[in-house]
Image 1 (tube, rainbow, N blue to C red):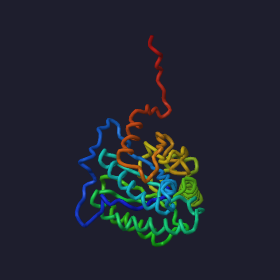
Image 2: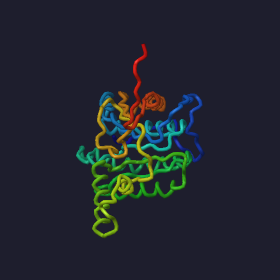
Image 3: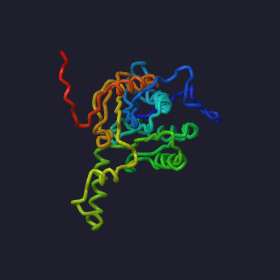
Image 4: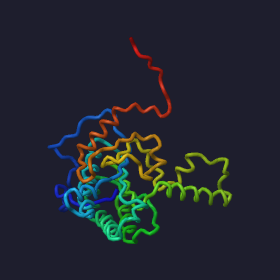
Amino acid sequence: MALGAGLEIYEHHGESMSFRDPARPAPEFKKVPEHIAIVMDGNGRWANQRGLSRIEGHKAGEQALLEVVSGALEIGVKAVSAFAFSTENWKRDPEEVKFLMGFNRDVLRRRREQLIDWNVKVVWSGSEKKLWKSVINELKLSEQMTAKLDAMTLNMCVNYGGRGELVQASKAIAQRVMAGELNPEKITERTLQAEMYQPSLPDVDLFIRSSGEQRISNFLPWQSSYAEMVFSPTLWPDFTRETLWQTVAEFQSRDRRFGSAKDSPAQG
């Protein structure tokens, strides 16, 4: 679940570049998820299988991120949340953490103009605690420079933890109650939602995890309460727009009932 580098086919050279690849046309979908959340897992295993270090795997993962963003744009997805660095990732080897901090910063700097060309708005979900100041600066600058773009929102989840997000939202509500601004009897789901990192984003429709692992790893638990889960066996650096479209096809086949049910007796 860490962001990497690579992507020669989308290198930006100061010219507007389409997110579409005419040689790889998108299928038509009757039902497209509005918000997709992605746990970008498998970078380390991808690298180790090739005799490379985990860091090389993270570098290779950037291609997959740009592929997914472009593939999502092509079919009309309105928001993608990418798990770039979790609050639990600080437990990793210090050299790997150091690399990831610098690389998350540099990817934003390097790809920002390309995302602007694609009319993609960048927002950030995560805590400032322990996060490098230079990373925070790049995240905030990306938010400022893309604030008015509206083709799609890319929610970069850097130093993000779902339980931590719920804790900070609860603290904000408690402070309002203590200040006499809010009656605790008036607290609703909407009250809590308003205190989340990105309250304006819709709930997650499709939750994808690459690499075959089948857990959400503390990623957007509140927002994903009714998400359809797809656990792809593909390691993240091998993820393409076609892989994304396969997961959307799986999503399209699901019957989303949101707690309701219909009686459908067998015919015979």
